[in-house]
Each structure stands twice: as structure tokens, then as C-alpha cells.
Length: 77
Image (cartoon, rainbow, N blue to C red; front, side, top):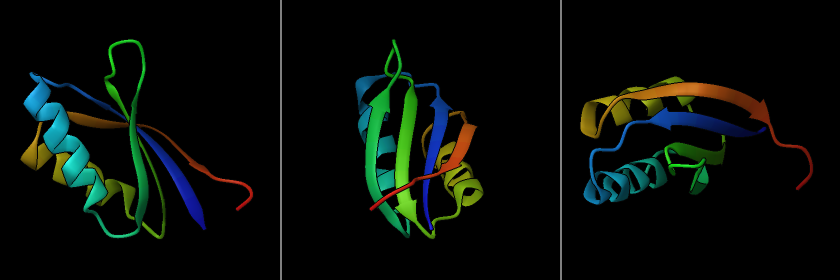
């Protein structure tokens, strides 16, 4: 089951943004990662069989504050 997770992340600098993308992309089951929102402060992660809570905890530990905004199932291919 493919999932779409939207997380609100507080970035301090561009380097933190890059690190968050790398951490999220390296997580188990992640297919794509992107930044959205007006201030590019929402991390959108799409994957199959990933653990959203574990990903949020890892981002908190390695980058900055991260909070899960929404979790939904992706329809289609």
C-alpha cells in the first residue's frame, strides 16, 4: 500500500533542508521526496511500506523539529 505523508519541518538553513531530503530519501520504503508549502516547510514523502512515525522521529533526531500533518493512501499506480 502506497502512502503519502506530509510533515511540517522547521528548517534553520538551506543545509538543513538538504539534509532532511537526504534522510527522508534514505528511509526504508521511500519512493519520492519533495518540498511543498509557501515557505517550502512541508516535506512530502511517498512510499510503499514505510513507517511514518519512525521517519518523523529520525528527522527530529538528525535535522530539526518534524510533525506529521497528514497521512493518506495513494490511489492508482
